Image (cartoon, rainbow, N blue to C red):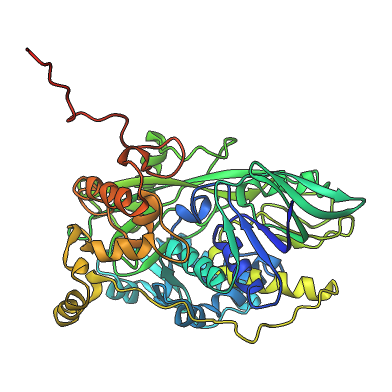
Length: 498
């Protein structure tokens, strides 16, 4: 018998999980399907974690409106969902007098978009605010509403909030096709069976074009993956105090240098347009491009202090479309198409998609209401997702009290990041369980320090094996086909000489 839902969301990235949380506020059965083993394993898993202020999108675009509206929602989200977010502000830095006019252009654009709290400062002021900045700085645009977060924490928190309010999640479940009755979508086909639904929401990120084409929507639209590569620095060796953008170009916002909520400095991304939606490899030319770009802002960066590199893909649209004045690589698609009923279609949600995500979720609710959907709020909807203890951030006194209550918080598993067994167990048994090494890594930040997991990995594998009741050889890094262990080496058979 096929299970029936009121809403199915395809994709458990930050946008999909925000939509699921917003839907969880209303009566009805909601399902989120995700082809990967965990939430946030696509674009969300590898980006700069910047909550953009909103001066960059084209004025009048849906992207600009979602960015500015979404940015203003983050303080309340942080209070309700208990994730790391700092409204640090950000700078667009001009190097040399020739780049100064670009700051005025961005200021005008930001004002048109409704961005509050912007001002242009001179080079001397910028040097005072960031001790490591290129001494040739001529000025900077300061946007006080910009911020930094842990994007994966945000993704998990939104998903857990949805799950706590009744939303079902099915992982390792890949969308294959729609089930149609005439021009109405009544369900989906997946590799795990068919599911019926009154509405389906396309939040498939890099694969949103594939999903919409299955529905016969916007056949000319295509996701053009844009790869961005990054360096991560050891926070013991260098700390940048601010979020620093270069003056942007047609290729994007440029190679930035920024601090993070975890104390590391990261540089990137570049913008390589590629065809493969799964290619998250780093490249020597790409790394060289990032390094050269970062030197423009912070010449004192030292490559010896790099502890990790990574790459992510952004779901950029493919350019001008048939509709006059619409450019798919400049704006979002958020719509209920006229030619297909029961379908909410999203596409091209690239940067600033993270900042925009709560506004996008609210936009989806508004579209459903405009389409005549009778959304009735639950009387028992719970907006608060409780925080879990983070040993690294606690005082010695609070650590002692925590360990007295639960001794497992006294066993440090990751030395670099001070992550304890108690924290790992909390994530394994959370509303959305962390069942792989990477799932625990992204939730707790273990394995991200100087040793890059060299100390903690065997211990995490053992803990997962014990808690899940499976062989250590079944524990994976990121899901199917990423097992750490292939055979035992200690259990040797001893021949009987007798």
